Image (cartoon, rainbow, N blue to C red):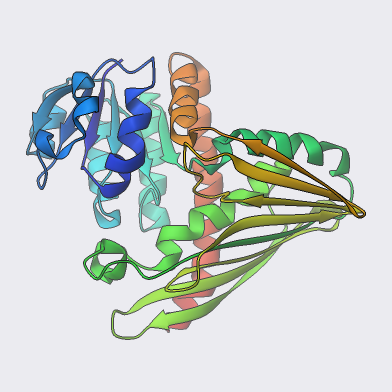
Length: 323
């Protein structure tokens, strides 16, 4: 299958392009970019590069593929996902799908009407360690479980779109996808109650830069999470249940070439388990596995569940503080 990529972002060049290159199900990668050319790509990936466009509309009209991947600044996700879906393409869009819940719902309606695959690129659950962790937690699903999550990063470069409100910047837009997906992934359920708090705000840029979430699930399972940028780097999950403690580092952005450690502590006995995997390759392989069946529509259900929770948190964390 061929794929058309709209945009040529840093994350696309660094993580997505290599993943697509090594996906057996992807034959050609067509790219539309207004700022870059083929010479900006690592030469080792050139053999899979197909057509190159400098206009997104012309790229869509070319009908050179069945699947579109949108790798554009946040404020452009809605319009180009809408254009792609209306043109009959299956669509995968980088997080966040849109900046408004109403826009996400509209895109979901279009995808359902056309029976198209429509997915958000939330890839952290596709690391081998997550399956190992979920298997370990299976026996404890009826027990109280405490999860502490933390994903904070230093400041981005000044020109990064995340620093600009008009481009859909801010920590919540960038990182809320992690916060709302943890319970779904680990517990396979929605929280019955939740709260959130704004931790920091950049007055000069008019963007939020940090937030906290608290969620409660069945059987006294809880999640506390801190997310943001302009802070010390943290990227981990800590899970406590009975006399067990699990710790997973580099959980939300694991490098493909790094053996990530999952530690398990039982009373005073500690074991370490290292696993390596490319979350983007695994994610796209999962998309392609469901592509030709009705299961491709399940991606939309996942998106809607996450978007609904994200919208409710946004009303409490961001919109309330904006008034």
